[in-house]
Length: 136
Image 1 (cartoon, rainbow, N blue to C red):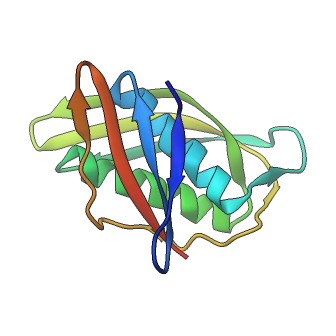
Image 2: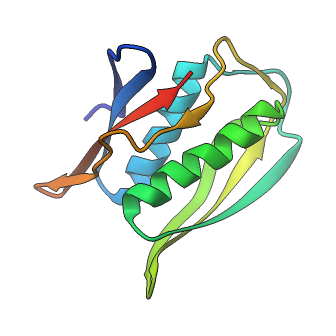
């Protein structure tokens, strides 16, 4: 199974992401983001960034997570591996916890934000997929 594939979009960029579970789907969304931005790492890991996000729906959680990473990418500090990603169902939605290796980076393309445009996470035969569009 592939991690992601890019898709054509009129004014923005996007892709389809895949995963054998919801955590892998989120990790592959990050790989798509880095690929579309053309992220290049310049040095060894400089720090570990801990991320905690809450969302009412799993789709909202994905968009908020990607936008948090875009914030760190804009500061040229994130471009590394996602570690210890954990998503849990909570009373009022979902919680995500993870660590990201911080690296000095450069990008070929600026990604402004992950969007909610037609986002829907689907599960079929034990595999997850979604399309995500990024504003450039």
